[in-house]
Length: 105
Length: 185
Image 1 (cartoon, rainbow over the protein chains, first blue to last red):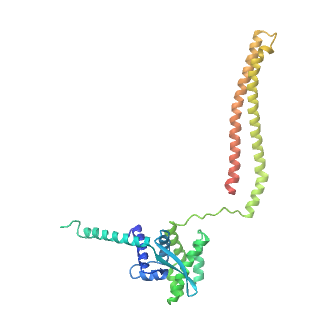
Image 2 (cartoon, chains in turn cyan, purple; image 1 turned 90 degrees about the vertical axis):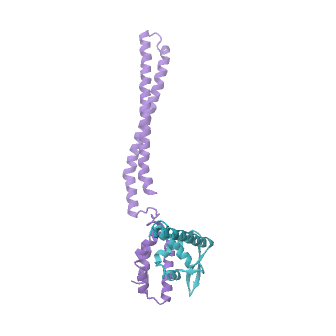
Image 3 (cartoon, rainbow over the protein chains, first blue to last red; image 1 turned 180 degrees about the vertical axis):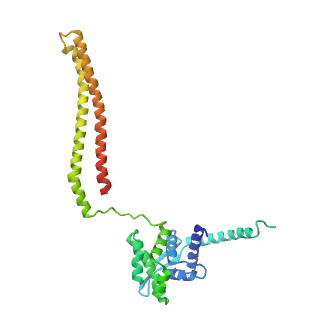
């Protein structure tokens, strides 16, 4: 898969994992495991990139006597997901066209 | 491999980065490690999942920095290098630089002399009719001619030594800058 396309896909996957409620690193990886495998070293720069882009907010909170970093989606992040869904729908049309052999009878 | 060793190797692989950045990255792995331990995964399995610490560091650096960033460090010199440089300056650079400065000064003096000759020659020519009272016409003409010749030679010397002085001074300055400024900054 094209690297930029994969990067965009992974970004949206991570945002989708925190869309309903804020989450943390281990949970994000676990939630995505059935659909796409993301390693810890892949997730870290994704989180950093999304945070820089304002797509998510991070905060530290105490959990069982240690600090845990929680990530919460922002409006910018939600918009990114919507834009990606639109893109997928466009791709779907193109994909159908290609699979149909290039022309509709 | 234990987590402690993994951490050490990981931080080592991230050494081009600032301390705070490396701390953040390690804190991220520490958190996931603790979560997995709580979930009942063994240390060995967790570290296997993480993979080689150098590989983890490389992936993060590639994703985040498009490769390993250039470390922004000042050049550091050992005590031996500083002492050696001091004696090199004392025994070689100062004598050579002094000689070079003396040469520049000599060129400068020749330039000034040439200028003096140029002006003096012109004055001599102009004043010749008054300085040659009682002399024949040929003598006066010869005197004026000598003055002009002196002026011409003086002008050539002035121009020639002006550029010699200029380029020698610039050359000495650049050499000293090369030795000291490039190394010390």
